[in-house]
Image (cartoon, rainbow, N blue to C red; front, side, top):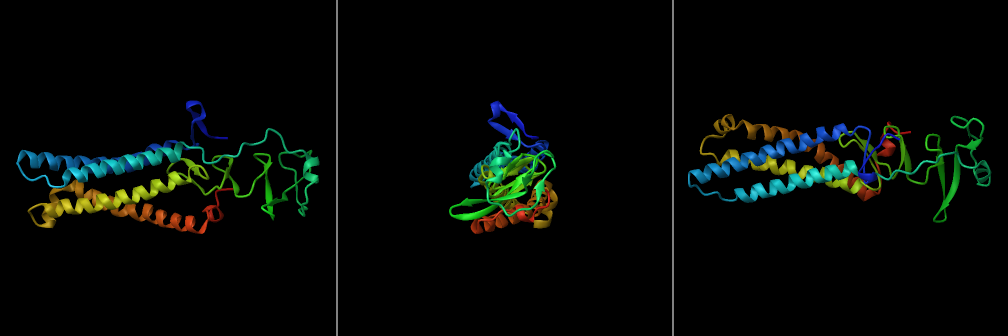
Length: 255
């Protein structure tokens, strides 16, 4: 188990928690820069006794989206994804032999003195389900449980291990992960649109305005690139939610 526990186990971070700081900078850096730009416009119009218009509303919405996005990022990274407690010892062979299993493959890896079937059949809601034995956690994985090779844990409804948040995405933090990527998409579209509006509101030609406002140019390019990633993820995971699927069958970094 490679997790890092804080606050008496209330916060559980993955082994690559350092990537959380990088993701925080990717989200908060451009968003804070946009808020600073809007605030400078408000101060400039105040000094010249010009109409501020809807700039306060633009600033408030930007701050709210940024706070929501960072909060969902932290909650995704710090919540238990649904880790299945591992056994301290292998299951009793007598209990396994009582189970009806057609498997002829036997486990010798970590327990050479025992002969345990690789799979066994269990009945769930009157349906027979085949479950596999996990050598690392020394247990038969319940239905819809998979082992993550990065965190070295079995996780309920394991979707994937996300390097951007440094945590597995599973049963207990999937909703926060989806809210994180969907809020990131909205934030990218919002900053992208407002940056263009700021450029067009300047009383000069658009090319000259772009040459004078490098920060807005950077935010437009940054958000245009980022929205393809987070937006694509949001649409893809929306499809998975609607079809009751997970990414896991398509991943190769789990065992």
